[in-house]
Length: 432
Length: 134
Image (cartoon, rainbow over all chains, first blue to last red; front, side, top):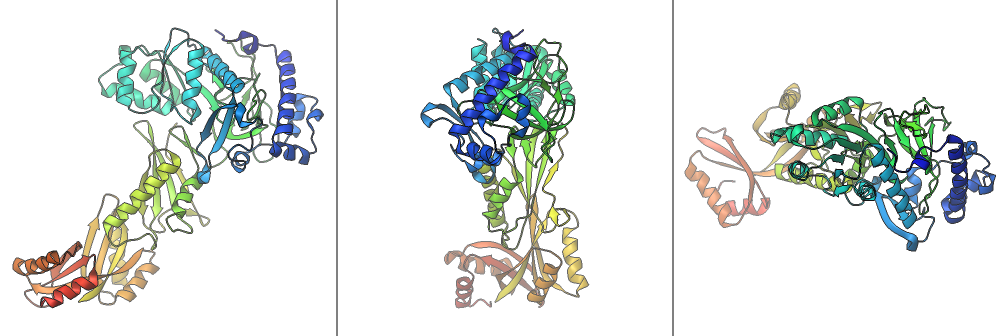
């Protein structure tokens, strides 16, 4: 089943021609409308007309998350704000989020990509989709929402949280498709059990899970517990949102929507392009985006390309599961968390060099973040109440910054393990 | 009298209190009074010692987070009547007690009570005015 067979199954030669002409347009748009890109390309001695083939892509400079942050909020936009119909943003380090904008055409493209993604995963017009991705600035909720409406399915825009109500609605409204993060899917399966229900009491048949890395083990567990087909979806707001790549029921990689994005895997240290099969950092270039054209964006996600043809008939190249990060970013309940964000909060509490540690675990299939903070004399009060207030204040500040709940634990000085003088910032106990 | 009390931050795990007392014992220090306040995750150990400044140094060198705070020490007969008398004064003068603890005094039949209050100097004055041996 295809949503748009012409593009999903386009012969590779034809696809490459399309990509080249679209890449030329994107370069021009970026060069003439975004000062950052003009500077970058000129410094690299590159003018839009110089691009002769797709192989020339490797000569173009990279775009980093910090470029978006330094041009906060609208500096990377290639269109005036009057052309932008929607803004999304991700939580960013040191309080500055990365802002992304969409023109009417960008929204239409994104909706098309999500429609394709849903159909690729086997979802049809008569499905009832319970969308438990967060609605709001996060791209997950609205991305799925518009795609589901496009294919004519019934969408329940429930957003995340309140798991008992999720299960009740799932049962009473006859939900056939669940969309959320994989860890939340597992949590829902636990609550289903707690409520004395069995998968047979529900109509669930497919789950499309993303926004955080997961494993084949997790897939088996979700599929076994919920008696569904569980498929992976990939995306990030800087590129467009969910729908950049989608797994088909053959479960052998995620199809990249190549008529809209160029994908490369590079060696994160040297920046060299790696051949299919080799593990490295995913880099994307947008081909049709108007508001925020993006050239060779370093995602920080580690994966590999799968070039072999897929049994589903789609001609696109695939990426393997996300296997990790090149930086110290953590993904907790679908939210990106950098240790520097927490450091920034602790600096507000009078510490010039706060010692802290993030301990991430998965309890009842939900990610739990514990922040251990060494108590210095500046933070120390003789009475327990003041210490508890301090701990609560730190917790509130971190929660406001990250947008997820955390537990703060005050610990004694020098108890956080230090290696070569630097404290070990992250302990990730999750098994995914 | 107003005395100096040491407060030590401790994690609520086995062996932490022992680490403090070991450090003190190894340096030949004695403890006159000791009280431990606890929460689920951490505790605050309060100590009355002969030489608070020296003890502070010893504990800081051992890497503990320590602070000196001032508290009121009152010696009374160990009866509830005596305790009541003090509490009545503090209550009448609207002094808020953050915490208190008591231990056997050096004189027979006497108890030393330690108060941590919101307004230390004023509280000590009130008690003196009412004829309490502070």
